[in-house]
Length: 73
Image (tube, rainbow, N blue to C red; front, side, top):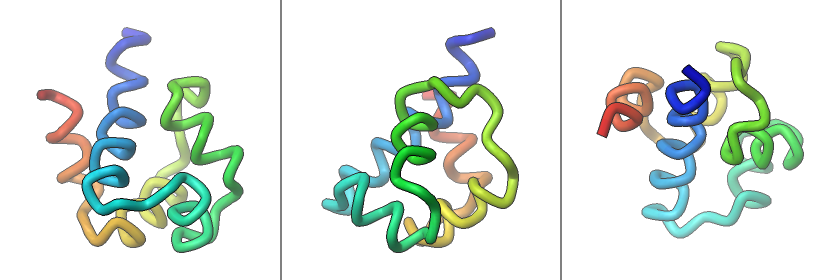
């Protein structure tokens, strides 16, 4: 169960790296605190808020659904 929860963070990190963004750049673009993004990517935040995921997905120019599907791979 814990593995599944951290997969969304791994998916976010993969897309972020594919787009050549640092955590700091993505956090600014998504208008969320850097520490929040770092905790989500590392799996420390096990249940990120929908609004936060929405901001991240928008900043990465993908859908939340895309991120969720990525985490299954």
